[in-house]
Image 1 (cartoon, rainbow, N blue to C red):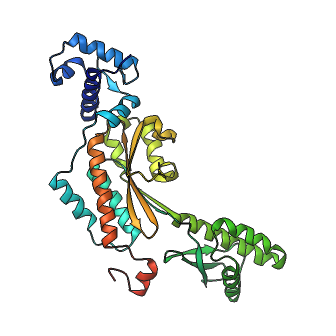
Image 2 (tube, rainbow, N blue to C red):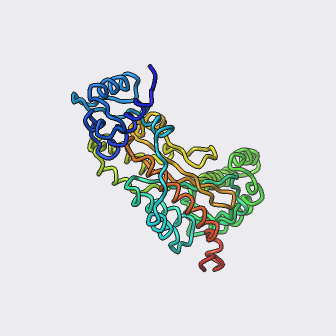
Image 3 (cartoon, rainbow, N blue to C red):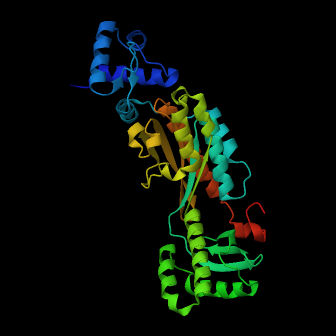
Length: 354
């Protein structure tokens, strides 16, 4: 069955009306928007054929139709008219992005909140290292016999510190020896190699020292993984305002992904500036009834970032693409002009904003 220009026009009208109303679209509404006069009977036939072809569905017994993921995909690929940001929208985006911020975490967190507020959908922002992070130096600061603060000097001038609860009681005088072992054997290598190095030391160390070293290496590996990719989500409550998520079970599943299952959010690895995933094109089950639009931005310092929104499949793709592109471009410009200082710079008082 051929997808004629008239069918495409009807599909475009259905998608755009459904985006704005969340209600199935009938033949009378379509007829009023057709460029040339077409009878309601002809439109009904075309709707039936588009439904048979899988581009539309009839959610209720009414004569109205709603788009399917296949219909949205054709709309996004061929029928959607590209929008340009208005001067006001451009000014609003720039005003948000040029807020005085001090660290990359704060920048991407605020960017996520701004995207969610601006588009009225949940948003997420990522920052991913293009190169594998390594530890340049370990420092252990004793707190008491059971706790120490581990300080990792990482590649890319980053510093990570956190409190570690030891599995064994440790004399504070032992921490320098542990730090020396870490610096002698576990710096300048990838996290995956740390386990192999540790096994090489099995016969050289007393069992208690080996156990403590194992715990510290595991903590370092977790820190490297956490620093390699940051994902910040915001605006999950925006879902509750959408008719698609009035079902508490469906809303809960999606909000759980945004809150606790961030690793299930799409993080495309290709270098394209924009990615649109519609319905079943999303891998995670909780995202099967949603669309995700993701734009990339450049962080510099061997890092790349993504900013995305999660919404219903009837989202206004043209508007979302235009505004998300505006945010991504703005973030790239902001980070070129005001690169986020590292925590080390901040501690030394040498950061961009002191």
